[in-house]
Image (cartoon, rainbow, N blue to C red; front, top):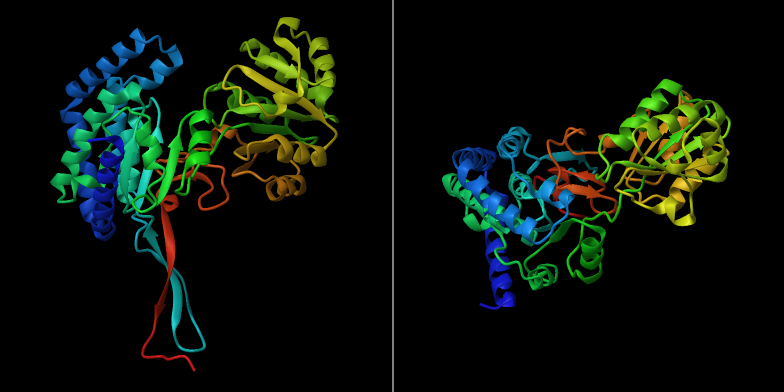
Length: 425
């Protein structure tokens, strides 16, 4: 079977299954999720063996250590997948929720009902745990899913897919509700993103190149973010201890995540007093500081070694480093900070450190990003931390979902009307 025919078959089965899943009860969906979790625990040895095959091939192909780390499924990682499925089962079911019911002068009552999107195509790279996470979120939100993982995780993904199918069967739901594409041919992605008759939305999770390609070529709506150039702004009225802790956590807890801070803005009024401690802390963690000339002067005076300092260039202000590198700029105040962020950020996550309520509220209103924070680390921009239970990804779009996309983001709303024989005059 050629790729086009195969993907058309997958899409056709997904569309048919989506109707059954949309009508499934909460109990049936939860039963499937709990059965999947049990299967993952039962088949732990098989999952580990499949993952070892992927790891051996990855090492033979010279994949970089960071990629191998993302690919690895430890015993703890396998248990985390099972726990994740159970956590999603424990979440409230959004499907069928009715809101905003209002009685109109005509006597009808008008409101909204939350409904599934339909069929969701998810394209991701080397993280096999995404297979379980995506299956859980799509199923609980009443959607069918077509999952296309990276070739590096083929054996792991197929082993997890067996657990997913077994869980669906145990609950009497169609196995085609969650399908994992079993070919590594890149043409499968091209087909998946150009089948609007079968797929309602695409969610890409991966590098910038993958997401740019999908955004450019897709004929199906895409929920995406290209980069995570997140900012922390240390305001004139910042508490120094809070500023130091927030910058440290935002930048150095993990370097390779999309909610890691890549740019630090410091108000000129407090830069001489607060930037030295921040710079010394970052330098102590071997972070390279790409700083504006005014910042460089303060950091050198504070004793930061020249080896860790570099004058920032224009491209640094918009860069997602995903590395122990941070861009630092001194700004003339809140107006310049907001202008800089709205010019250079990727509209992912921004934070202000301040004790001034009025300035904090201005920052919330005027910064145009998916998540905006007051006195908190940008690392909190995450579905689990936001109470969504899990996330399918983070969106920097403004339509349809924005920020971490959980169960509610995988649904839409339709208008509903309750009447008692009314006719329009």
